Structures are given as structure tokens and as C-alpha cells.
Length: 194
Image 1 (cartoon, rainbow, N blue to C red):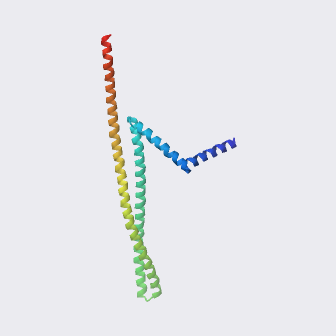
Image 2: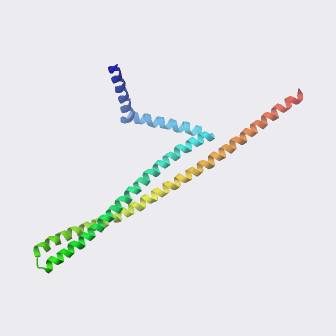
Image 3: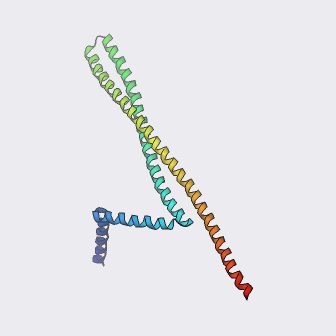
């Protein structure tokens, strides 16, 4: 029994490796996705099929929106953290400047030099943070635009789904009505003769 279970596990692992880790597996997945898309297109000719087709498209748009939203939140969080670092660096810069000035006033040149080196390091840090924050603001604005566009696309797709499915259902009902009227008209002349 143990050998049999081991063989089954090995076969499953090999199948997964072939499907996901090889060129053949990639080609097979692409081919299967193409067939799935074709079946969905054919099914989309009915109201139920159209709902399924639109629901799949909506899921993809929702996933994209969620990724864009997560990315926006990450960028915003990093920008805010960088702004906090900048505030702290500015406070530290003022403290070091004050201490350096106190050392100069008390003729303590060695300590004043140490504070001057710290001040120089802090100036560099502040400049880097300012540049980083500016770049992050641009990235944040760009990501916000992407997120907003994704939200708009998602909303448009949902509205389109409602309109198309409603129209298809209405058309289907009209076709059924015409078919039932046709059956009545076809069966009516046979009743009169009989």
C-alpha cells in the first residue's frame, strides 16, 4: 500500500511539473484557455452564457483593481513613512545645529567638528528624502490614476453586463412569444378543417 501511494504521489508531482514547469505545459494551458474562451463565446449567445462571460470578465477587472489598489496603498504608506523620516531628520538637524553652535560658543572645537559631520550627513539624508518623496508622489499620483481607471472600467463593465443581459432576456422573451404565436397560427387552420 505504501509503494502504491508513493507512486501516485510521484505521478501527481510529475504531472504538475509538466503542466506548470515546461514549455509543453505552457502550450497546453494556452490551448485549453483558448478552447475555454471559444466555449464561453458560444455560450455568450444566451442570457445565462452572457452572464457567465461577463462575470468572468468582471472577476478579471476586479483582480486588476485589487492589485492596483494594493499597490497604491503600498506606495502611499512608503511615502508617508519617508515624510515621517524627513520630519525626524529635520528635527535631528536642528538639534545637531543647536549643539554645534553651543560647542562653538564654548570654544569646544573637537565636539563642534563632530556635530558638523553629523550635520553634513543629515543634510545629505534630508536631500535624499526630499528627492525620494518627490518621486514617490509622482508614482502615487500615477498609481491613483491607474486605480481610478480600473474602477471606472470595472463599473462600466458591470453596467454593460446589466444592459446586455437585460436586452438579451427581453429579446429571448420576444422570440419565445413569436414562436408560441406561430405555433398557434399553424395549428389554427388544422382545427378549422377538422
